Amino acid sequence: MHQWTIIMASLRKSRTSAHDRASEYGALAATVSLRREELDLRQAELAELAGCSTRFVHAIETGKSTLQLDKLLSVLRVLGLHLALERGQREGTVTIGKELAHLYDLGQDEVP
Image (cartoon, rainbow, N blue to C red):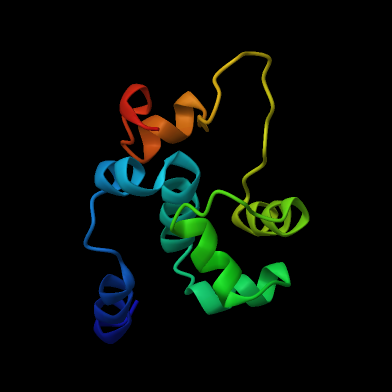
């Protein structure tokens, strides 16, 4: 990889820590944002690949509480993620799997 490419890639990364992102925007938002950055995609590039708008990707990454499920699933599919449902009564929370929580250092017990 050329030095210029490395510099440009590092400029795209958020300066906010994964844990802070998860605390502010929620686990889903943080995971989508971190995975997108891991794949070195801009929001516009992800949107194009998923067939949605950049505004929609931004809405996911900033923790918007109402999202169109079909569009969300398309974004997750592009990122190599999927939505899983579990039985339980955790009203108003989104949790992520232990593997992703560990990978992105999200401290799942503390994430809304």
